[in-house]
Length: 534
Ligand code: FCB
Image (cartoon, rainbow, N blue to C red; front, side, top):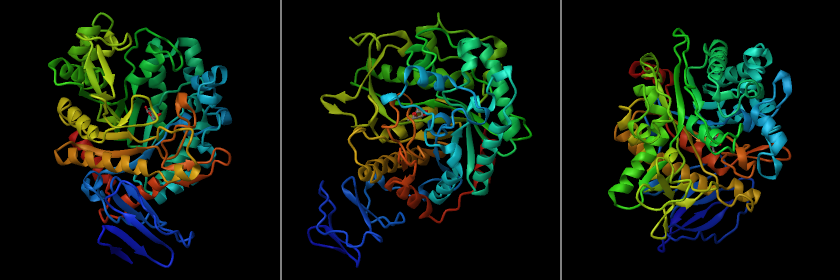
């Protein structure tokens, strides 16, 4: 029984639980104890209002403006999913004829994650994928974004043969997803590739790597293209270039150097797949009202998203990027421009955060900001002593839900409302080391994050943005590149000893959000629409 008291408290009476809950206060006041843990209810404070869940992901008691979001706020063909990538979850790093990837070698020789952690075992998804797909099914998602390990499929690139065991592994994943009604979204290259290609060619610094990529992508299209209808060629090429070739913190640790035209993707037209790629798309707001900061924010967007997307849609680099980096950028021939122009069917947006941008052409900035490759833009999280949003686990990354609407609108306008997917959006809390397991599982902050970012996304869709899907990063806690296992984005908690997966409160919330609605999701319709409009 639910009852509202005069003071605004909600009193819930049942045989199993009696809880006093203050709706409007900042603090949750639990005035009674759980009497029956088996059938327990979970009461969760969300912003200043209450969300109430039963043990199956329950029902919503009350909600507020920022988080009032329903499945039916999105078009019926809209795909909701979760994502992972091969190195971060698979493990089995040398099983069934897989070769060493550049990340295996990096982690083994230099120790890549904090505390020397690596992805040798990761979440052992290689052996546990069936259970994982079961869990995905029980979440009610309609799509799963995962990457294929290059070193598992082509252990030696063009120097060897395709590895049947690798093909078989992904066939099993794809078939089982489809059996459960889950659409596979495949990223072909997500950060790692066979070490041999580094040793022989120097990987992406050599145009031969493009041929390798074509060879690999072709094998994927041929083997899986009859069932996979959504492809992402490369995950976050700009971030990869920055980490691996500018900052030198990801293998192959280059600190400079040109990177060539690494984008291509032709599927067999008969297969009818759609191909896009994902860009890391932070939102930038001007630090002050000055015209210079406005321009800096604009430049930051163009340097980040436009640098990758403009060539694929307009056939050339953005003018602003050419202005600052012209002497270093390769120039495209007429044929190349034509080849690239409009060569993607959709834009994948990986969006997590927003920061302030400040101009560095006229004011003082740090040496790393005040440089051409960053467009002479500095970024800060604070204005007049006030943070733009709460901190997350990643330095310089803040919770700013409005940024979702803003970045989608910017991309919509610049690229003439090309179909978009939010291919990554997720939260990891800043207190990475100190949290207890029960705190990690009762991840209210993650719910707040997803609910408010989804509400912001729904706004942009109402304003006309052609967004076709949303993938929560990540399906489960996994290996987080240089950070190891302490930075957790998962909707499922993974016990590092037993590798047992436990749905977090956010998984229950997502399930509730996805299933509490009568809208039927029509994947076929969404796919057809993509083709008609692309
Ligand atoms: C993105 C990566 C993804 C994951 C998230 C947190 O930049 O694409 O693999 O690490 O960040």
